Length: 177
Image 1 (cartoon, rainbow, N blue to C red):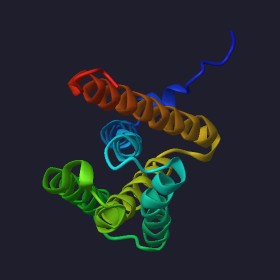
Image 2 (cartoon, rainbow, N blue to C red):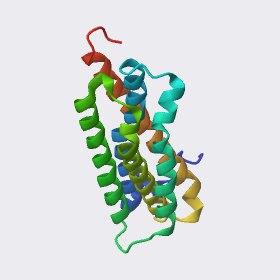
Image 3 (cartoon, one colour):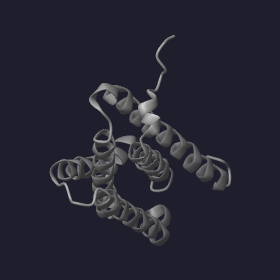
Image 4 (cartoon, one colour):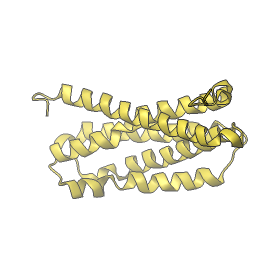
């Protein structure tokens, strides 16, 4: 006669489940990018781990900026911010791919500043809008479980993204390193 791990009210809320699914998909699609960049920047232009950290710093800094904007801006359409964030994120990823295609192993870290800023800002917009939108769909008595389920979806997405992107990267290298 114990309580279920997830309250059934959460599993009956279509708007909550939609946003939770989007969080899973967003993180499944993006979390492997910084991981892969860290590996590629050490393998290609032979940057040190500290130099890689500095090269990737735009991502979390602009993610905080995007989160701050999303926390204050509440458009009438609840899908506006996640859509704008996803477009910015995808645009940044396309610019990263173009930069690597043009420069190859000779890529300079400053070339990645604007693309990583777009990825970070877009992620900040999307993540905050989806999380707050999902939690707005549930009652206070299940908010803790709802938050835990959102964090679990986010962590599963991150894990899958790194596993998929890492697997594809290492499978495509001649010696698997």
